[in-house]
Length: 260
Image 1 (tube, rainbow, N blue to C red):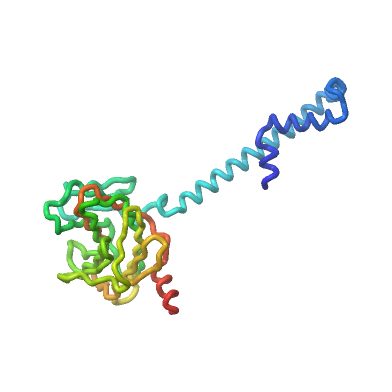
Image 2: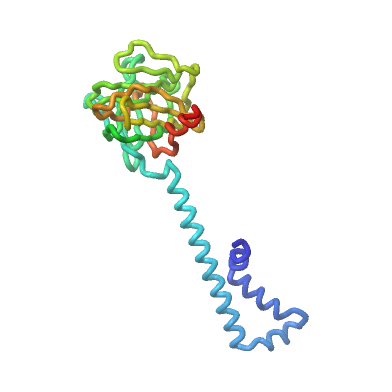
């Protein structure tokens, strides 16, 4: 494949190559005199054919590159866009992007100890595995905490959340956050958080992985009787999160690591 591309990169260069091969061991005058019109036309047609092949190869490479680019998670359509369910909080968020995949907090929320929710515009129901990834595009330096997880429709239970500051976990009415079993872990700006909710059996399971790190089980007690929706809680001005298509199978990875 390398040689045809190199040979057809420039039609002019190919024609010069053909002429130079005829000029070997001859002076210029005798070489030009020996070239008949039909022979030159044949050579030019050959060069044109090579140029056409080169253009086809270039077009093929461009199409292949574009196809591979579109397979990357950030270039595929996300599994959902964001919506502000609580009407009183609509002015708190800016939702943008082609599919409404980006949400940004407008201004600091009045209480420094509170974050408020924005939700995925999707209902995650029993019988399926639901996968998505969240890109922490920007985090407010003074109020960096973001909470990620799921909530029931209309903010009913179940609530299952994890914090970006320590990766501690909370469920429903818990007043205290449960520490991460492996110790505190901070999710930073530009990190990608992969999430997977397995509702094929009761109770459901909720997995997470950060960037290329191993999958971990967040919760194994998800009720499946009612649909849930993805949730992100923001409090600090300018904090921005983007949802993108999933690229990992966290449950399978977790089971494989445990030898199941």
